[in-house]
Structure formats: C-alpha cells, structure tokens
Image 1 (cartoon, helix red, strand yellow):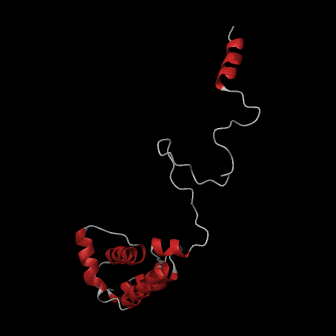
Image 2 (spheres, rainbow, N blue to C red):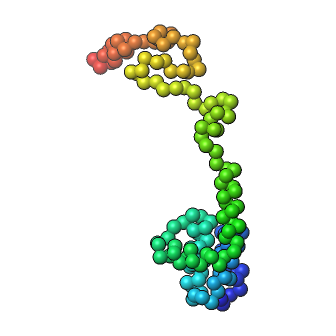
Image 3 (spheres, rainbow, N blue to C red):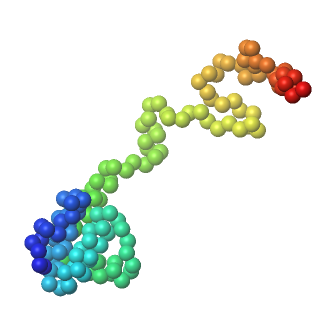
Length: 146
C-alpha cells in the first residue's frame, strides 16, 4: 500500500469499525490491487459491523477472506453476549411492569362493553350541562340561512 495504514482511516469510522478494517487490510495486503483491497475491506467491515449485504459473489469472497481476520471471532462473541442481555421477550416484560402502559381495553360501538377509562364515574347517557342538542343547533343555523 502506498500510504501508511493509519491514513486510510475515515473520520466517521468508530474505533471498532477501523480496527476490523485495518486488520483486514493488513491480512490481505499484496493480494489485490490497492483500490480493490480498500473496496473489499470497506465491504467486509460494513457486513460485520453494520449488517449490510452485497451480491452473492462478493459475499462468498468476503467469507473466504474473513477466515484470516483473527479479531472477527472476538467481535462475534461480544455481539452474541450483548444480544443475550439486551433483548427481552415482550410477555416477560409485560409481567414485570407495575403500571401497564395501556389498560383501556378494546371498545367498538358494537361491543356493548364500556371502555375502561379514568372517568368511570361519569354518566354516558347524560349530556353535559349547557349542551344544545342537534335540533337546537340546526334551528340556529336555519336562522342565519334566511
């Protein structure tokens, strides 16, 4: 490679991303042209770190080249360990909750079931005070349409 290895690091790359890409570059230096090696190294890091996918021919080549990257196994074990801790089944999480987020239940106009709402003590069939019914509103509208 023409430049020092550290000059190939991109400013947006995380340390984990760069370390993996750098090891790939060093492991395969001299096997490909510089531009091809840089391209493969970026694709390799994208697949392993970001979960990207490429055409099958590229994925087969990356899989073969990945065998020489020793830190890949450590990264995969770390990811597996983290995924076991981070993800919780939904039903387990619901049972641990003290105050459920949505306890309103299901209500449709055909269900004959009153919704479970915080204002349960209010009467549903009694209109609010000072409410003008439909007929009163229509007579007022008719007055202005003369």
